[in-house]
Length: 237
Image (cartoon, rainbow, N blue to C red; front, side, top):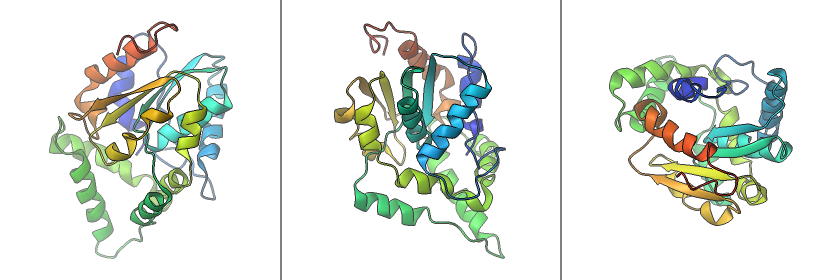
């Protein structure tokens, strides 16, 4: 996808803070790297963005699926600058499960009859329709799926090479994980024991698209966490 995922959410959060939703390199309107990157490469790109925005800190990070991994690595790169993290899903997988995911998200070759596009559409409808999003809303977001072009698999490739369990365990910043009922729900349920300073918020009524379908509720939970005291960072949630 792209920063479009956060469009409604950052409008809400931006009422009382600077809220930025960049496109990950190679997605949305961001230039793509020439070679398949790893999560740390993405994290360094986001660090460069923070510097380009001339933000001295502190900053809070929010990641969604692959963005979760990028946010965690950026927090490890800049432990003094990154204050808190909000993670939408934190998928803890076995080596066998990561291999299965790699096969599921292999590069897609174009077909003359456009079947590759209809397959993408069917998958997108399956994961996004319902839970507050109607077909018009899904159709409005779908074109963002196509902007990764023939390098769209780069993000998944990096994600399934990344050991999130080790990274999560190393973080000392307060971490709030939101676990909606999406395709990573089961994997995310394994994250809680790895958090030295964190919590997992289960939201089975949410799925993909919840930042559009439940914008105000999502902003309320995130704002309560980010605005709570250092002594009790999770008291508001």
